[in-house]
Amino acid sequence: MKAVILAAGEGKRLRPLTVSEPKVMIPVANRPILEYVIEALVQNDLHDIVMVVGYHKERIMSHFEDGRKFGARIEYVVQDKQLGNEHALSCARERIDEDFLVLAGDNVVDAQAVGDLIRSGLCPSALVVESENPSKYGVVTIDKGTIGEIAEKPQEAMSNIILTGLYCMKRSVFDLVDQCIRSGEYGLSHALRAAISEDSVSPVFSDGLWIDAVYPWDLLELNAAALEKAHANTAGRIEKNVTMAGPVGIGEETVIRAGTTIYGPVLIGEGCEIGPNVTIFPSTSIGDSVAIEPYTTIKNSILMSNCSIAAHSYVSHCVFGYGVKGKSHLMAPGAESFVNVGDEFFKLPHIGSIVGEDTGFGTGVIVEPGTIVGSGCKVSSGAKVTRNLPNRALVT
Image (cartoon, rainbow, N blue to C red; front, side):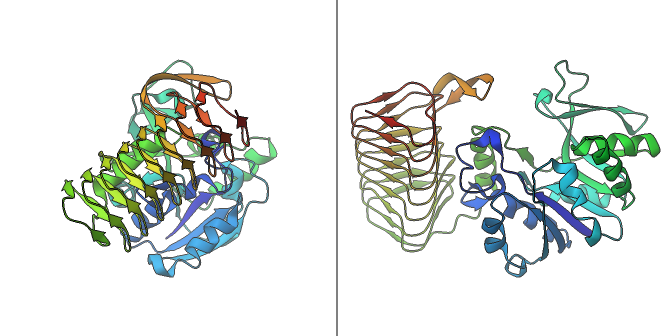
């Protein structure tokens, strides 16, 4: 059996974090989301993977290559125009000659979730889970052990059971996919509805891990879940009078200086300079070549590689993209806040700020909770950021 991983999309609702790379390559617990998908397949002895790529495909292909170093055999097909996941699946038609799995490359799944679908022996079938917020997803009803109705992001909840984007499908589904595309329907749920009308599609429930990142703040939930399962290997150099509690992973050539306190689960990448007298709280991942200067506190956040946070700063419930630079006394706290993404507004119980790559903050900058700051922005010393900023904005 082969697996088809759909990894061609940008992830527009995750902007500005997807300016220079696809959603599937955003790191959680210091690994691209897509790595978790491949790992879950390999752990179930499913090694043959067809990966559909498109947006910034070179970032994916250069990282995974032929898949050998991940225990897989990967072949790539290109979706030239991102016309939806049903169209993406159609691109893989010539590489499939039997029943196969379909997975979304932008969901974190574990081996149990994938294994439960495989071990069910049911095809066609769909992995489903119960959700507290079903309106974000494709919602299904179940009738006599099969999937009945499917509604995409319904305004009124008809059920709390949602599709995860993980399916076992027969090769004949490609005929249904082609029919839907000719009708101008590009979402995979349309093909699933067609499959239901021709045959029964079985739901498969699982207690395994499945989390989707629809919006930027979802990455913090993914990160926390991934850190709970991460291997915390300690390397680098840890000076005297450093306090660590819980699982803490530290990469090669990283220096943790005296007076620093780290409460795991925390992952710190390679070549970092942390401290002295820095405090890092749980559910935080820090990429490679990150510098965090004295008397700074980092809490429940993602700092991607090449970030630097100067002395006396405070960062809570934030996602900082690659190369974000903050001078001293940067205040980016988390709190209950309203967040605006496109035409949508969300009230979140605890959120800091989302900052795109290569943005720089001067001394004494305050970034209010719930603010989304674009990539390549320059914020002058003493400024207070109270609203979303577009890419390359200048704040004086």
